[in-house]
Length: 172
Image (cartoon, rainbow, N blue to C red; front, side, top):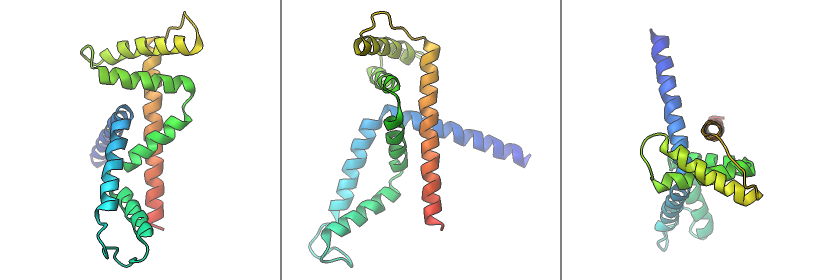
């Protein structure tokens, strides 16, 4: 029975990771903006004269150290890095898809789980026709779902790899 509980908990954690990856992918620009603002506040916030702790003559170094400390404690930092790594490695077609998916998410047109599919399909096909000058471009909903699943899977993998490295670096 204990193994079953562990399996259920693991399945729940996997679902949560996928939901978090999806959220970070869709809201990356806003999350990054929030992160940068909070980091700037944290780094510069303690900038009182003589408040440099044990580094009184090195304010730049003190700011860098505070920045590293902030990154270690900011909950979304690793997710932001994972999204960034994955985006850099995506093919042009998948980047166009991701852009269309984000725009469709912001539009909020239609209702239900499949509303994003229809809107993304329309935007993606339009962008692909424009980019590749192909007046006959079409992609199925199933193909879009597969691309979305692929991108989410890569983000979760990158996140877990970054967390693993973070863990190994702190426990060596």
